[in-house]
Image 1 (spheres, rainbow, N blue to C red):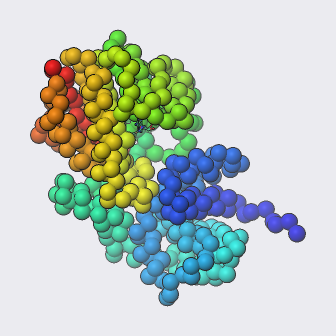
Image 2: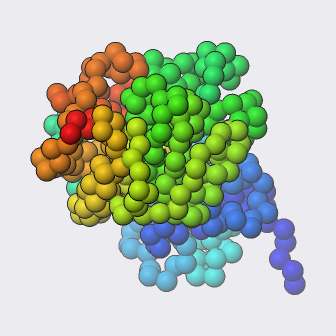
Length: 440
Ligand SMILES: C[S@@+](CC[C@H](N)C(=O)[O-])C[C@H]1O[C@@H](n2cnc3c(N)ncnc32)[C@H](O)[C@@H]1O
């Protein structure tokens, strides 16, 4: 007999659970899981957004959700349980963090369990646990420590060593908040901020409350602006006026910085190792009516036989400064990842240096909070390449606050910087940037 049509809301919940399995059990990034899940999906854009939101909320709040659910379990769940645990987590996230009405969150989770061959025997358990959680869960969480539960201890310890224990807790708490929507606008940011109901930040980005489909906002289809965190927009601004200059953007995809450079009138060459990501960059530039030369190459060995007025290296990194937008980082990164990436970054930096014309600028940046991917990388580089010296960044320039700078004049933004009156409009990604000049 054909199965009855799924109840409204079920396909989005099922997609959320598949996303969680892909990240938590198979180790894929949330972005990669989303791209695969929705490649050939009939799900409406609204349901896709809901599935991603549920999965992202579980990944962000995993420690708290597991703490409450485990406190209700009298014995561990059996090994063969299908996606039972992910179904429970996703139901719990909807109840505790997404304000889903209990009858919908619980009813759909029970239905999901019934449709999963291995979880089907546990439908009554799902019903009982989630009903109890709907009644008592919020109070249990109020009495618990969200930072300690959700941020892996090794990461908190690292941040404590780098920034001090108090700052580490601020960084961690800010990393658990959802990020606002920051955009870079080609021209007339004030007018676009007014039209979109946002505000222009001191750094020049426009900030809006997140929510809704980005593609539906005014100006998106016409290519007036692109999504880019306020901190991510700073490295290109630090190059100063680039109109008419030759600039190479190494590790360029998906192209937020390439777009900034092209919009500012630079002659841009964008290099990336990944052909698939370069295709996305090309599509982004096309929407924005901007142009750049695209090169698919390994930036650690790329040798074009010429030099550039400026070289921007936005190196691949652990991305621990972007946890607000990519909460899967909390679940996927491991303590020795920063050291492994630091090796790659140093090879990229050494090759990038050879592409800078005499008197030109080398701008190195990463969206990591880890010192070995930031300040230590530059110390190492300057110690062995005497052709370069720091060109310190001054407070006030580009709206940069003094507390975002290191004593050497490098940019060191943290997720807890740029506090606003409303939490959903606060914070920025944790970015490190150093500006160097070729003096020799
Ligand atoms: C942090 S993202 C860059 C973000 C980009 N600069 C922007 O502003 O939109 C890192 C990029 O580095 C690329 N990448 C990683 N290793 C590379 C290498 N050895 N050579 C060139 N690109 C590389 C990745 O494909 C990825 O697109």
